[in-house]
Length: 176
Image 1 (cartoon, rainbow, N blue to C red):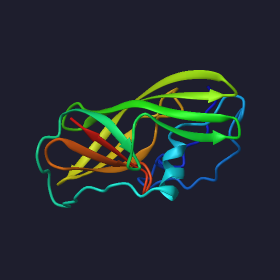
Image 2: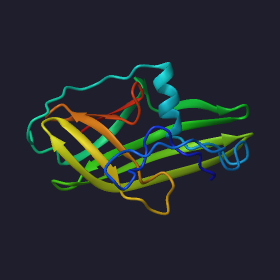
Image 3: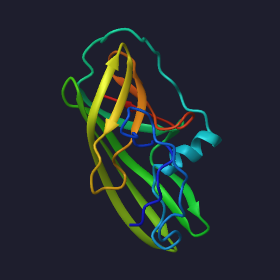
Image 4: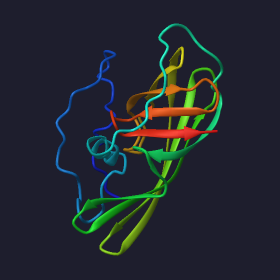
């Protein structure tokens, strides 16, 4: 499946800051589809997502466990959005797993339908995170999967829910 560069999360520039990039034309747009996480940025313009609390001092609890994706931008899954004149993307499921005190994985399953041709994709990205109170900063490891290698923030409610901010207003909400 063709990938459109994500605008929701940007890779680090190697100096600790987010890289500012101009989006190139998507490869094979209209033929192969669009990167589903790009819709998180689009949804940020259309729908304001819920945001969790924030504490900026120290580690506050153990967030380890698996959290299941419930909604994106306040819209429950499965969520279908238009990705072109003849294409749709349906977000089917996802999970965020806090593995250790510094590592995580994020999985997203989605389908693209381009002129009746349906393609199912599951993308899993691994990375590290830092925790400051209930605020988290996630840094994905770059891999052969073009959906991986990005940086984003999130908040934890202290027990059973995460709000991940791929883009302001396009928050993904996960629960245990």
